[in-house]
Image (tube, rainbow, N blue to C red; front, side, top):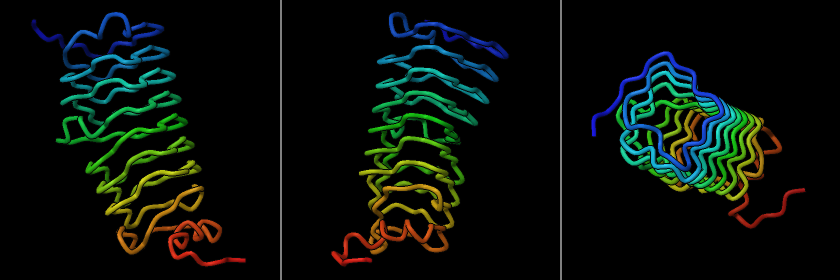
Length: 190
């Protein structure tokens, strides 16, 4: 099967959960209000693309290239980003539902997560250096051997990050959020 090359296109209100998006390279494309739920997006290439109000829950991303891709108001529950092509991986998220997603061992330097639900997200061994998590719910998110140096979590909440096993040098936290750095010490803070 030959792969397609599509540039500067807008795809609106399409349901790819029944029939997968054609395999290929998509450059400077917008996907608006499309459904990719349980869709196999493996081996596709997305360059400078935007997904807005799309359903991508449980989408398969095996060897999918995401370069300068923005997700806005998307539902992406349980997506395994660790399966993506990691070469030049560059993504940003705004107003997205990313509950149960996995970023295991990914290099996500300077990634922006703005107003996102990051509950139970796996950031184990991820490199989030200089990333921003602005107003994100990080309840039960997993930070183990994660690099969040120089990252900004000042407006995020419900996180528990163990400073003994994570790199947090020069990261920014709010005074109320510091409790999430001390929870594993079983101390009482009043």
